[in-house]
Image (tube, rainbow, N blue to C red; front, side):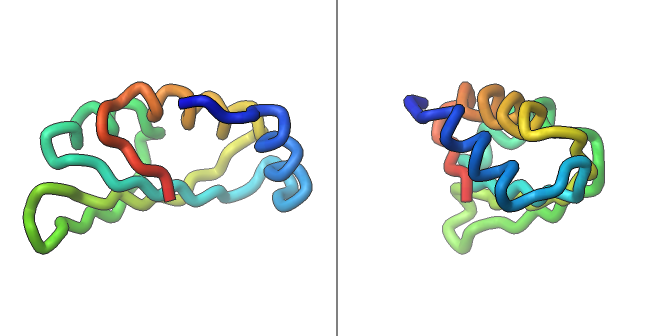
Amino acid sequence: MNWDTQQFKEKLEANHDFPCSYMFKFIVPISNKDALLDVLPKVAVKIKRSTSNKFISITLSVEIESSDKVIDIYKQVYQIEGIIAI
């Protein structure tokens, strides 16, 4: 994933007062579900299957301490094949 982390960090800090509750939402092929769950913080997640049963969406809200931690999670998640962040 090629993205400007500094610009993303600035947007995060302009829109959130850390620490705060932050929502992550991803779509991933079902075959990569466990890889995604292994990367995410261990909190309750909402999982919804696509009508084709090929993909799932995973949504979670987590208390997060800084924009750097959000960016670290996204960097790890983007290593998973087929991931889409919403």
